[in-house]
Amino acid sequence: MQLIYYIYLPVVKTTCPVVRSDYRRKKCYILAMAATNTICSDNSAFQNLTCSNIDIIDGVTLENHVFLISQLPCCAQLALPYRAKIAGRIKNDMTKDVLLAVTVTLRDNNGLALAEYNDVIAIDEKQKGEFEVKLIEYDDRAKTYSLTVKKTEQF
Image (cartoon, rainbow, N blue to C red; front, side, top):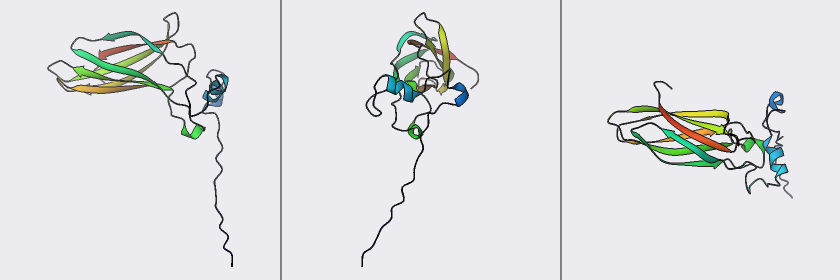
């Protein structure tokens, strides 16, 4: 007597993660990947941006920050909801707690602002805190970014 085993494999349909109405305005990461001959697990089709300016308030120290590009997945279901992020660590040198707004501004070759993204963090006195600003939309005109840290009163 022979036993026959059946294995059910679901079929997953992949589509470009761009809303149809925004398709003409945005570049689909799949098209960008094809245009640069990037394979899915090898690299990213997006460029690395350089920091052009850091503006920070007195009493707070930016210890470090890094620009991280999201890797391109092999299917749309695995795509991260952001194209890149800027993460870093801030030290509060003040003798009181502080609520900070960290703003990243994407800029073109001429220094004109294209988009702004932000994160709000609370840091206790004489402590360190971490921020993570996610860059949501892809804009191929962006060449640099600037980082601004200011006090804020609300989230």
